[in-house]
Length: 359
Image (cartoon, rainbow, N blue to C red; front, side, top):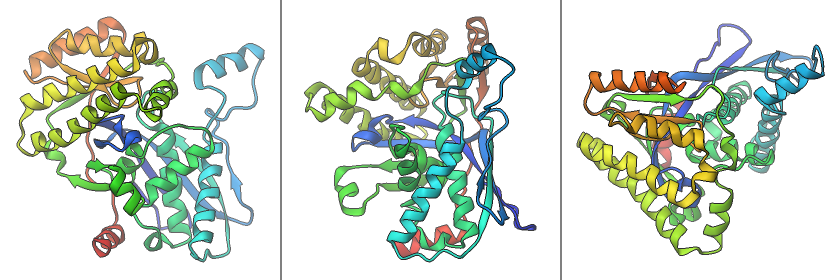
């Protein structure tokens, strides 16, 4: 997160995240471990103005085309929607939250704009990164950061996305609000009692070297939860028990990280994906996504999705020689591979004070 307070403008940066263990159980009262990475990010800029303006991005919100073919090509590349709708949604959710909680907002308008380099549909939380960065701008512009609890902010981000029909859980938003490495417990008891999960930051140095694999043209990650969610709500015993096993991976993984038991971590990463594959099925996960995992495993690496598909996190326990084999295998298959650059926490001092006073 970056902020420029030397001028009247405010700018925040929110980074991509990797769902490391336990996903997607966050949607099912489970538990996950996630972390933010500096490989990719989204930034939002707020500039005080006489009128409130949401600026379209010159690439992601393109509405002027050279031809019909250009329009179709653009839709195939980035889809129908850009980031303007995300900025509008979080403005709406933020205003309503403040109104409902008697948080007075000062008078004043602004111009809101954004930029992002997070690969589209790569399961790295590109949409929520834009929303999170915008929320941070609003908190600082209206000077109400201390009045909107840190634990509540992920729910506000998710609410904005839900308004646009984006189906997801809290995991990604927690990882991006807190930054760093975070263990999250979304048990029904906690969610019902507190209105949010229990979020525990961990030392990023507990992680071994990890690698990101992704395709330049990934499949849509927004369809993955559909059938499983319905079966879970309908009481499907296989889905319920499998999702509980996925959630337990995050709890066991937390201890493995603390002990730096990377042999156990290797097994947990692979088990996480295998359970997911059994629940969702190959048709839902997509051949390209499955191939990324299989390419990594072909050289003995552990591999699982970072989110709902589009990218994979890999662990090479045997070191540099195995990493080289992974790079060669990915290159041969047409995938991009790069080291994951894990970020420390992005919370501000007033955020930490708020958390301390609430505990």
